[in-house]
Length: 134
Image 1 (tube, rainbow, N blue to C red):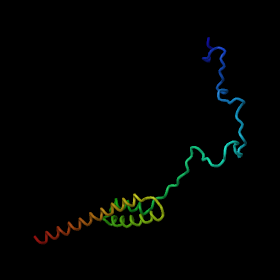
Image 2 (image 1 turned 120 degrees about the horizontal axis):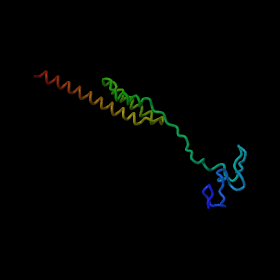
Image 3 (image 1 turned 180 degrees about the vertical axis):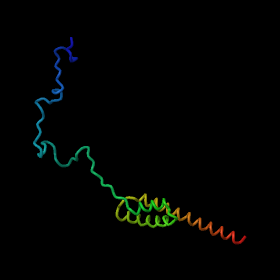
Image 4 (image 1 turned 30 degrees about the vertical axis):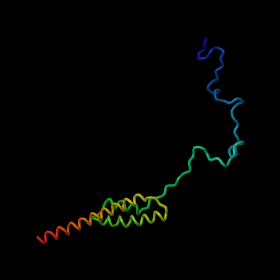
């Protein structure tokens, strides 16, 4: 025969409050502010916590170099992107800031803009020269 709680008759079933208590009553803890006995207080890091890592700030000239390389502003932006990119790379190496990728992107885009400007100038001179001789 079984009782209403699902166990056999005469079987001891602890209540949910009693189920997880250790024998001898609830555990005794030391007052706050005192070290626990049996555990060393130094030499073991707290489990589950990682040290907070501070993010390095981006260099402002690296950001400006990338933005000017993207925007161009009639090729003046390309020239400034190259200048700012080189200065930013030097400052990043010296100060340890982040933003090296943005500075390199600004340099690449700036040099591409200057190359396009040079190609347009050469094409304009060639077109003017060929139309003047014909």
